[in-house]
Length: 177
Image (tube, rainbow, N blue to C red; front, side, top):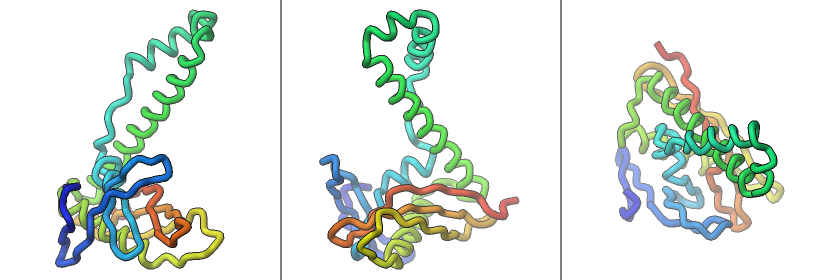
């Protein structure tokens, strides 16, 4: 998927590019005009494919923190790792909840479903106005689905060059049966 130059959905083409984020990491994105949608936000995060957090390690660290606090406190990396695992757990749970929303409205996470969501997000991004003081703009839109609508809450960052970058998404089922 990420090695394609472009992709068609309902006859609409969007380019797939690697975009370097502020951390230096490269992120595969759908691009149309000055709008970027990270593919992983929809394909992985939105479709419930975030990896499970290391449950055993979480349990060990929590147990050590409760039962053997002196030993736990000797290594400051224990607390850092515990925080990291809790973030992984939260991301996994959010990802699962979003895929449940997708399924409740009758979508199955197919390539067509994913491309429909990406195309919709690209449309939303293209409609954003660029203001000098924009650090994050939240948009709410709906996508028609077999059993209702998928409410998509997206937060966008407008970068210094005017590029509109999808920062976060959340899916909520509407009118499902």
